[in-house]
Length: 102
Image (cartoon, rainbow, N blue to C red; front, side, top):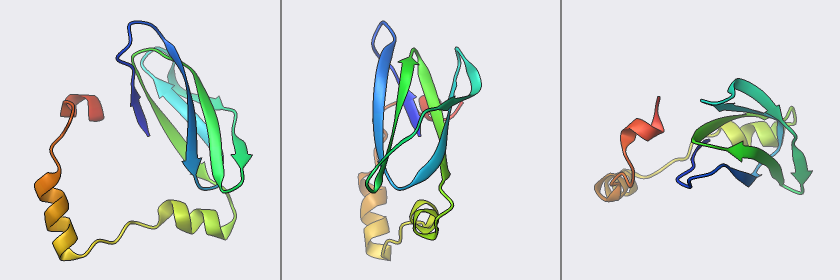
């Protein structure tokens, strides 16, 4: 997951992701790669906090060992051909591509 901070000062960000993840690592231009973040399991969700998002950051989520979490985390979405065409027609980037990939 990638994050961008448009504020003028660092912010703390709390994230809640559906799925069971064993570990989360955080990478940023300021801290480098990869700082482990504390993970909290809350039902079928995994929660973690980025303590100081300054410019941009990226997290790497490691699926938990249980079978259900692995298939949920790695199973690609399936779309019909018609749905793919509609998504492609509507998908206009809302921010520059240079922010999506370093």
